[in-house]
Length: 75
Image (cartoon, rainbow, N blue to C red; front, side, top):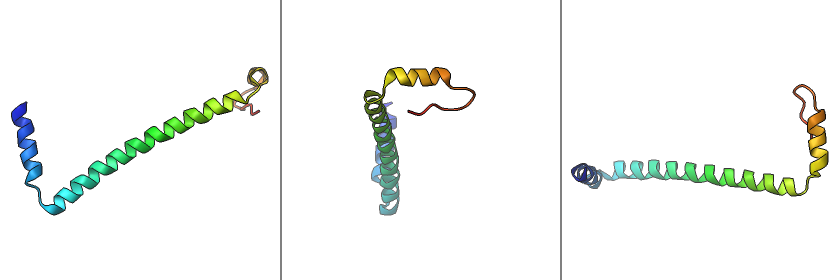
């Protein structure tokens, strides 16, 4: 296992400048995508919590019970 890691490390060290830039660009692109997905999820959950604090929960559940078919009850 350690030998495999050493081989990968040596290959990365011996890359040309152009390939190194492409590698770093790909790594930063993947990291930024994962970070933006995490931030989006956190913002959605925070928005839901804030919305729920200001919603009349009794009216909300009554509207949900009365809804028919595919209609969504909005309060």
